[in-house]
Length: 278
Length: 260
Image 1 (cartoon, chains in turn blue, red):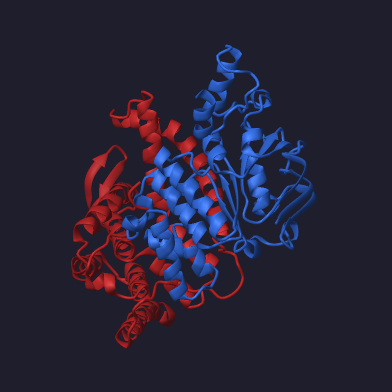
Image 2 (cartoon, rainbow over the protein chains, first blue to last red; image 1 turned 180 degrees about the vertical axis):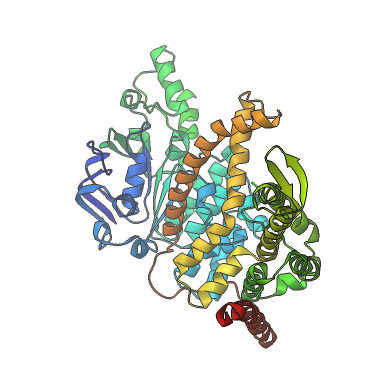
């Protein structure tokens, strides 16, 4: 369970709060999407949940942030690393450079956790297969494309089996096939291991298809929180500069043009759109 | 983005040596570079020790290519500076008040040869040793992991800078910057390259530090490793011999000074 109570965060040497008075609870095993325009606070929320704000960036906090019984604000990054994993946008810089092959790169975090080599081997092989990386296992991570490097970075964190996985726009360099794989793997994590996934992204269609819940941030505040069908169909997202899924936008245009009844709920996924336009 | 280090994978005896053995060899090379008295000895060390070792490691071509491209600017600049300003009686060329002397040229070439031997030892280590193996070997001997990572990063810094510079140059070329030009204009091209290169490198450092933290790098407690390095009694003896030889060279060079 992740708990934030009136949580706020301000980067060093700034006056404005990047996150303001955020209160929410995320139970174990939930797949949560975070949306917002650029500068809304998505990345900062990811850094806060993983302890990087304030432990890496410094800055000032207010309120409380707990991960299960652990007070994130009072713990060190080293202590939090086994509990919460962070994947961020730039794939190249997530390759540690400390290991020579993809297999060893994925094992690096497990070595730091002090796991026995036999367990490391097992976990690495599982994650390689799950992430469709087995064929790249012996290659240098630096010789891979951006999309492949991102899959390695995600696999490396998944192998550590944190109870919470936080991802900041992890699919920005992936093609639709790669994006689907990542979302499907994360969805499986929440269902099979009851891991909590928090994922910030602009890819609303994918969030709508896979997430249990969507948070909307605007100027550092949590302005909406609910099921994807409810949150992502709301017209107010246009005012926040977020837009909507292509299905919602098309359906809304159809309603405004009088082609479809204005009473019908707007779709956010392909299946819902199929029903809507039938 | 092909590689982040100079390491070249080969199936060779040199590659199979324990990283500490190659580090001891580098230590000997550094001592040789500064202890050998003149250019004949230095060239003999390079030709009879380093070149055969590079051939044994099946890295002779990249060794010679890298060595040559790095040392050539030093040879030219040192020969010119020393030739004109180190003094001497045998003038090879006179330009007004300045004389380019044989003695100065020899002094410049000697300094270059010292650099060549030191550089050769470094290249042998870097071309034949996986950086992560070197880091592991050092941390297994008690070096703090953070310090080991700094060593590793130092070994990778030039290839990474090259990769990054290539990406920036390609991006600038794609926006119409002409790079296939004469030397003077190429020097001017450094101006739009250096700014983005430095800024990108600063961002790189921050993000890589975050990536390490996310992988529990700073977690206290016992760590394990999938990699196991092969060592043997023979290699321990070899390392001891190399270090003793380096020590003997230092004593040999210092003894006359102490007696005087």
